[in-house]
Structures are given as structure tokens and as C-alpha cells.
Image (cartoon, rainbow, N blue to C red; front, side, top):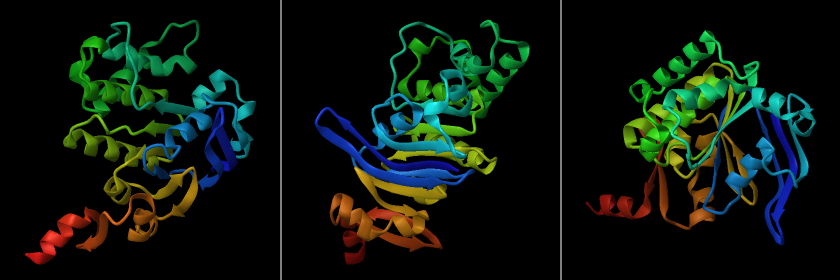
Length: 259
């Protein structure tokens, strides 16, 4: 169980998170869903220890995150940021191999570490990028390589900040399918997203965040017209098609009904 209890955080005078409480079971693919500026990325950074000036508690299986040193934390959780700047022309393989850093002694990767890096590249379908400098890759390609690095870190917790935002449609589905497979294998995957349909199609849990938790639970119950209206106004319609729930723009549905 990954638990966040009564967590609050502020930047100077601006309170971004207020008494956030959410308990996420092991093996979940849990979405943090909400509008821009709702605190999703800030919450991830608090969980990762990148932001420390919060009140409340964050724990994994009852162990407070504050009690872990950096290497212990790196063996417990991996992170895929929303965007990052690569200054040095490391190859994609070298970037993915860096995911093994928590386990490498004297900064000398073993043959096993290299095999695991190649497997991670293959799992994301980017083996062809293996020897290319990261500085020459597109934004979407960089995102896939960064996700492969997180896979190679092999942690029970995986945090991803809008991992599919820079990807084309095919690679979006690939990344979400990969995250669901990881959750099915027993890892706990926590992801921020703006797409309610990705939440409905892939996630086991969702927390609606707007400074605090507005609702949490099964996506088919939480992603409702009532909750979407609270966030965005009456712009979305939730419907079921062949047993699957889907969110469509209300304007589109009105046009469809007129036809």
C-alpha cells in the first residue's frame, strides 16, 4: 500500500495542495486527474522527495519516505518527468543503462545490466534508437527512452507525469498498455493525465485532484459528468458504447443527436 495522508504544500504564499489523502493498493494503475494547475505534478514531486517542505505523511507499506536515503529511494521508486533537457549526447542505450545506477557498484555496469537495458528498449519498441544520441531524438522518442530507463530501474513504485503527452496515437497506446502490464505484474504505477478516456480504458483507480482530492475510486464511477462539470463546466458527455464507458465533447454529442 502506498499512502498519502493529510498532505499540504505551498509555494511561498500560494497553497497548492491541501490535506490530500489517498491510499493506493499494490498492483494499481492509478491516475491523478485534474485541470492545469491542480497540483498533480507537485504531488508527484512531494512523493518522490523532490519537494520536502510539505506537511503530512507519505509512506510505502508503512515506511515513511522521509526515512529513506537517496539510494534506498531510487530502489523503491522510478520517475518519468513531463519534460527534461538533455545537454550531453549520451546514446539512448546509455540513458536507459543509467536506470541501473542504484544497483551498480563502483559505477561499473555488468553484462546483466546491459542485457536489461536492451530488454527495456525492446519493450518500448525503440531498439532502433539504441546508438543514437539523445540530443538528436524527437520529443516523443526521448519520452519513450526515458520510460525505458524507468522500466530498467525495476522499482515497485513508478511515477509518470503525463507520459503520453508528446507521443503520437500509436505510441500513446503502447505506453498505456505497458503501464497496465507493469501494474498487472504487481508494480504500483501512479500517473498524471489530462485524458479521461485513458483513465477509463487503462486505469484501475483514479483520484480527481484540484488542490485536494475531490473523488477517488473506480474510474467508471469517478469519471462522471457530475465530476467533469465540477472541473471544466458542461463541456463533456459520458456515455457507454458496447459496455465501455467513453467521454465525448458535449458539442459533438449535440450535433450527433441532431443528425
